[in-house]
Figure 1 (cartoon, rainbow, N blue to C red):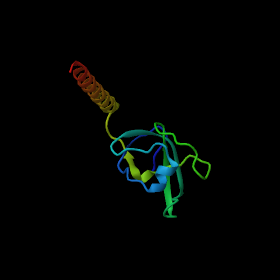
Figure 2 (tube, rainbow, N blue to C red):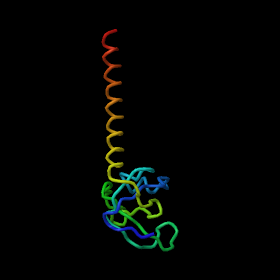
Figure 3 (cartoon, helix red, strand yellow):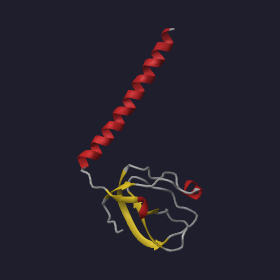
Figure 4 (spheres, rainbow, N blue to C red):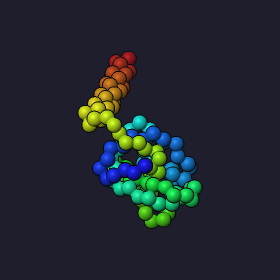
Length: 115
């Protein structure tokens, strides 16, 4: 599957091997939408066969043991077919969810102070 720089993609697989957690400080999350910042055909480091990798604009990792930032397997993503409006709506929902949690914590703290 070919991707292009600037394309919106959605993560469909966020199950990683243990090494990924050692090499990466941030990993894609299933269901989240990302922007391709680099796309490359290469040899898959685990399977040894041909593969394609992507780097994402929203996730930047430090260089791994090979002194380069790791790519994520392109098979973990599919093209995003929704609209940009849906992305903004998703972010607003997540922000709202955080604000609701913040309010709940504040009210619990306030109630605890009144006891």
